Image (cartoon, rainbow, N blue to C red; front, side):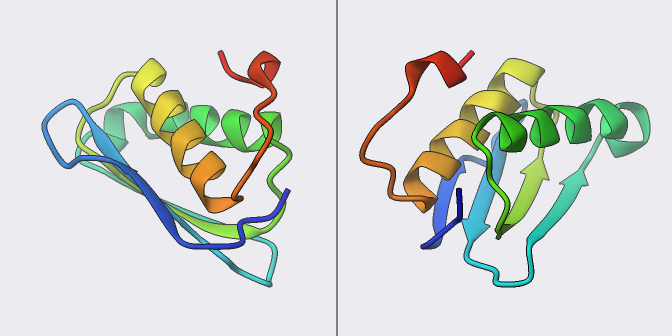
Length: 97
């Protein structure tokens, strides 16, 4: 799957995050900025990568601005941004956790 248009999901409120996706022809470019990166950066990265793999995203720029979100929130925001950015007409509900 490939990101074909810019999309955004989330807020910059405490315990939330913003996920921005946009097209990128050079493969996958993931940037994570977080207030709690020192403590939870590895886990945040794992959830982001797991979600990208679940949707088979291989091309696009992904920017995550985290304000201390839980894993379930990260996953939900990633899913929303990916579905918006890929202009997916069919949702495979089995991929959503």
